[in-house]
Length: 96
Image (cartoon, rainbow, N blue to C red; front, side):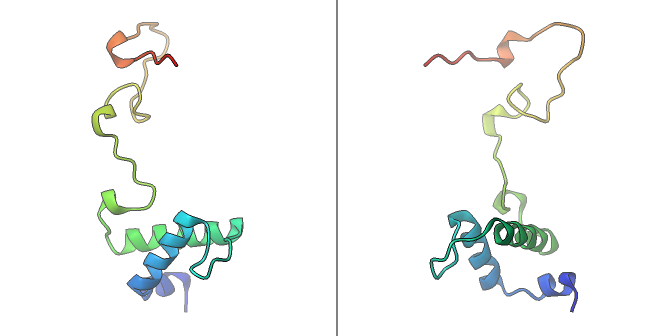
């Protein structure tokens, strides 16, 4: 059985258990996940979500950009290089 076949046949309960283990950093029996186990589990969960067309907003690692979408806080926004012009409405100074 290949990796792809294994993920295709993965039981939804096992997927949810893997996802919860990644979130909590430990297996259901309380043992801590090693970095390698976390990495392998995360790859399996992401592959499962892609393969089974899980809605994007329900996928592992999804970030709701909300009101930040399209602003300088959104990493998908390309900043103009070399023009030196800054739109002050895109930035907010935060003082603590």
